[in-house]
Length: 226
Length: 92
Image (tube, rainbow over all chains, first blue to last red; front, side, top):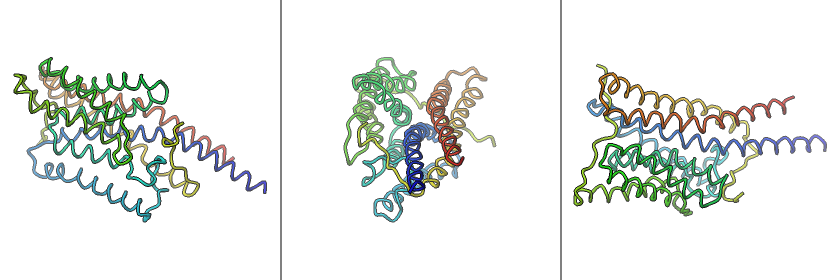
């Protein structure tokens, strides 16, 4: 009886430590997403690299979707997925939404829009999460908006100042709305990057009508040393 | 704490889960640092050396990636160390 009690206590201790760990694990996983910006540094004039650029992100997302389908169908136990939240037990995991969002941005949006949106999802989202854990709700909106706005300003600083301000405000607002609006069927990890991207796409296509010139590419593709 | 924000807790496969986390940890920490460094190197070799300001964004992005990740890596590593200490105490 004493042995069973001790074992139960030990298990409880481990579960508590895992609880804490999963929190930071998710944060680090999010921040890791910024590494996907490497995509834009890869050369565009080498056939095999272009081939890999086109297919690797798609294959990774398809693999994640297949894994999630198998988990939801019960073919793979949720025990193998670390850091899942309670609400993700019977729903597609946030990491799939995160990956699909990044894939859509990389493939269908100009890099001028995709880069700050990916930064909002990968770095803005975990910072907003930490603010939410420590401060009041109003601080989440204010600081979240300022952080996301900073990512747009840092990447659009070469653009016309009026356009940079417009993009930063609309982008920051879109990101914070995407982050704070929760839906069961659509994750904020998807919304925080795709909602500002769609808003900015409208500005992108209408900027010419207002006499504003669009900036060139933010990241110049690298060159092979041979 | 909001119930929805709680994590799935498992009593089975605990060691497997902890191992998977520790296995992924170096990747999650090293890759962003490497990518950030490549961005800074690109700025240095194509921008700073040639005196072109066109590559300044690479420097900004490199710094954002590195510092953004360090901000979360430190508490993550501390939590991992705490976890391994707890496990050591348990073994004793």
